[in-house]
Length: 233
Image (cartoon, one colour):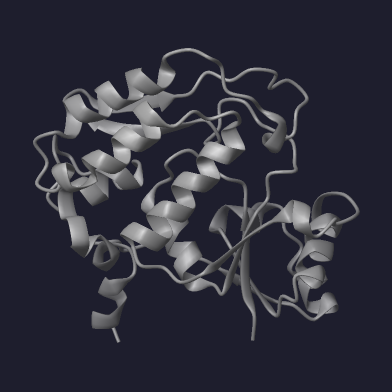
């Protein structure tokens, strides 16, 4: 059975994003759809002494663009993000083991598009830092047709999907019956009951970038995403 998830690429996503990736055999980046402003595509949250704060990438040509068409400006946003992340987390227990990676992403490498940056970060964190073995694909590989749900279902058929794992927010607009008609099993991800860890600046906030978890828990990070469920069985 081929289990698949399809999501738009996000900038340094929260742990739930990686939880879905770990649940499936194939993860498909859905970046040939409309870019949405003030969303998770180009920003995420870090924890500060005054609460969660946004790290936002300024983007060019975002109006009426697909996510994969959004370009990154030749400004110093990357240096600013590196300095902010370092200032907030340099005293975290495991920050030092990720510093070389951060320097490569923010100070050494040049990024042309938002999709390129997001997909690189998500794949590297998944494979190299969390040990996830899921196969990554891009929706542009499949030339899916139709609009909205029809297009998603066409993509799932062309990728050989038997079971589709969706985020819980999609319950508001997905027609479960269509999946049954198409012979694809639909499962909604449950983000409840994640265990807390020692995080700076209480109260605890689950909805911050994966960096927060990595810097505080290091090699134990996967336990706080999915490993804890083994103790529930």
